[in-house]
Length: 419
Image (cartoon, rainbow, N blue to C red; front, side):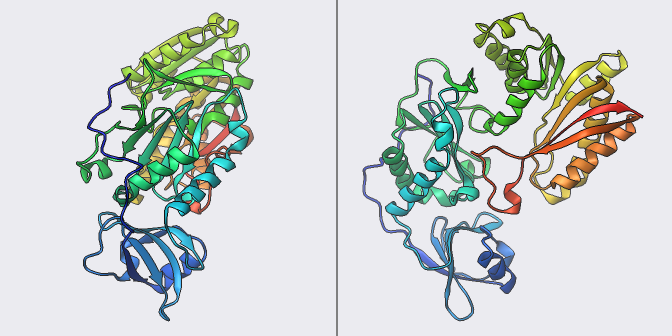
């Protein structure tokens, strides 16, 4: 069994006090957005709230005529002061509510659950599934609960009980954003809330391939589940190709390219741990003849530097995948993010063979799809090339989009041709 930090402090069967409700008034503009279904109230939009309102209180938002507008989780430590759970008519937030929301999310993924070739996917996608600031990911019989607001800590026992009743996992692991961890001395990162972790690595299948996830200390909840559909697309494009996987992380695209019949796959990542995991995931699927026949090269280093050196040496690939981490966590970082995407587009266009294909991805929610695609076009133009057969992709069915900021994942693919 993998080690898990901290003592088990959540008993899903113990009693829980009734959540405290506080009255909140917001600006007219915020009220208009709430009535349109937006799930956030920012701190600057709060007109009045009790002085003793605490994280996790149920914030009941009223209009200027004292009519109910919405109810959500209050978080005085975050610019997202209220994360909305329910709009419209008044609704009781109790154990039955959590079970209903979780059950609806599970049903939304029923098609994936019925797939024998995929046992790893997102079960709850935060705001987009009506549980703002909360993520639940599945890795076969191990599930990972990730909290992005301290407001959930007051409701953790109820959520764990709902997961146990609706899903019944073999293990449930707690992960938290850095901000939540700073305000949560009661739990340890990677703490097991239910059951026990399996001996050895946690493994799962995706489109028939096997991967391992570090659910205790890995990035996100252990694997980048949001790229499943794009990885399958790359598998379909890879036959006989030489493939470059930039920011490869644990090798999701690399393994899929090999499984698709790629002649060569070259994985590049700045993290040696990630490269080691990519190598391990490739070996885990070596029973497939196509994977066994594929030559796998790896480079640990900064993507910009590695790509620049490859271009200077005249390296060329038939297919290039560029999937960097988020470059913009705030609005002020957007210009730098666009410059980074432009440079990556330029370098990838220099590394792809004439008529070859590139897949560019962005997970920066503050960069819109039009901005991203326009920036990719600019970078390719700077390389002296142009794009043909441009196609954009969105997230898979386990990452539904319920409001504009929820569409964080953008992907565009095209053939690169010389001017």
